Image 1: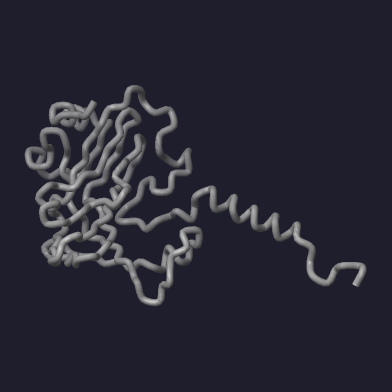
Image 2: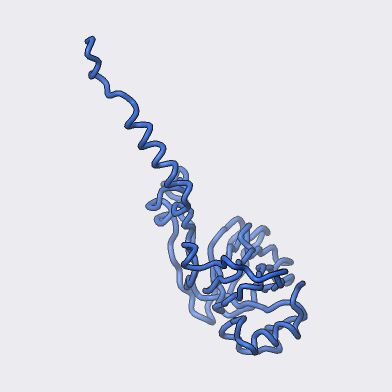
Length: 214
């Protein structure tokens, strides 16, 4: 069940759903969503001298982005074909019985601005600011200003509350994030398994020059 404005205001009032700060409830709480404003921090992707990105190498993932800070009242120009990470101004706390999805506002969609690539799902238990995956699919640059309502959250009630919510107990990588955060895919457990397998394989191979018959 998707929460309506009545449900959202009730949950916000009870305090188990947190979206903070909300400066104007009448403006930001929509019929079935909450508008989220753009923050001031951006992570820009660097293309120079990067042949490719290896997701399992932490040094590469950390070094291919550059942080840019834009004061409110100034502009960040999103050029055609650009892909940058932004953040919501608001911090959210999702209770165990809700999930949220990040959607773009239609006004920005009509300017060819997309606010997420694939990561539009927010787990129950998540706490922190939301990283936005901003891209410009159009032919003209678009000026983005911190504080503008660029995205919206839609909340859906689960059939039953999660017993294993997102958080530190699960080793969740982005819990309590502040500002945009680059990918931490290198921390995924399958990469550790792959490294262990390579190590075991190298140990199992005989070293050259150790054959007693030579």
